[in-house]
Image (cartoon, rainbow, N blue to C red):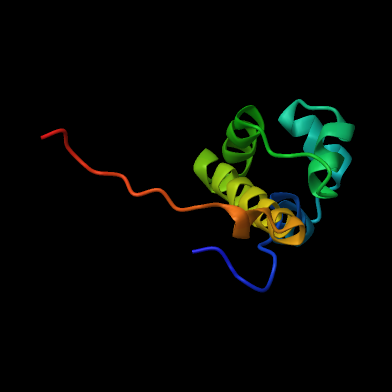
Length: 105
């Protein structure tokens, strides 16, 4: 379930606060260990870049997590952000529900 009134953690925030800071590794050193450029990692940490499937695999290997941990965190963030934007424009309220019948008979 997505939080209604507060934003979920962006995966970059999770990465920085729960993984990098506790062990004292710099972004530059971690980027080198992942084999990615610092701009890519910093973009994720600053919330300006999404965690791709490839990056999820790299993070999971380096940190002992699953790639799904990272893709799920990204999906939660993306869904929350989309809901905020749709609510702000009123588009979500304009959608009409469709009744779907299961089976063909």
